[in-house]
Length: 213
Image 1 (spheres, one colour):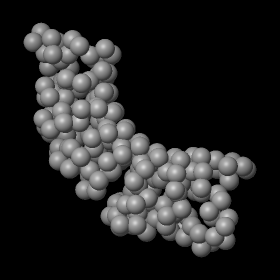
Image 2: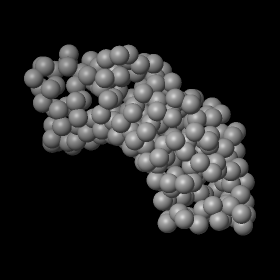
Image 3: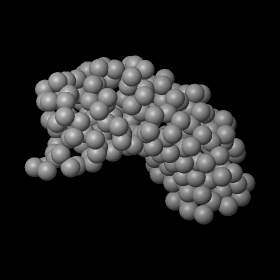
């Protein structure tokens, strides 16, 4: 299913659900000119419940202005060089309901916002994510992490907003990440909540302008 209005050709946001044929055959089922016209303005794409390997999503070859991508409940996120080029301008990325994170995540060096929602086997953040030097906002929600965020996260000096919700395995925050934070949101993380309430740690968080704990 592809959700579009009667004026879908002018929409900048597409949501594709259970429609692998759209992902795989875009540009073939319609004329090349029509495909180019309808996809040229798309800046945000949401894809859910796809059984098609990501490297076969031909639609991505036509989305030259794609800056915001959400992928949910998709099984195979193997990538190809051609698809990788389609992601060079991504600024916002959200993964939902995945088994694990794809290894190519660290290659998206233009990312400013990253949301990781219900990643079932996320033992720790991939070290290649330390390449995301433009990242400004990170949200972890319902992730089965067994450790706290790594120290190298502090290398992402532009990271200003951190949200951690329903991640019961996270018990503390590394000092390295706290230095540049301006916004901190913590909800339904019992051990992390207790860590934040310790007097010594409240001093470490004192400079953060917006705190919701």
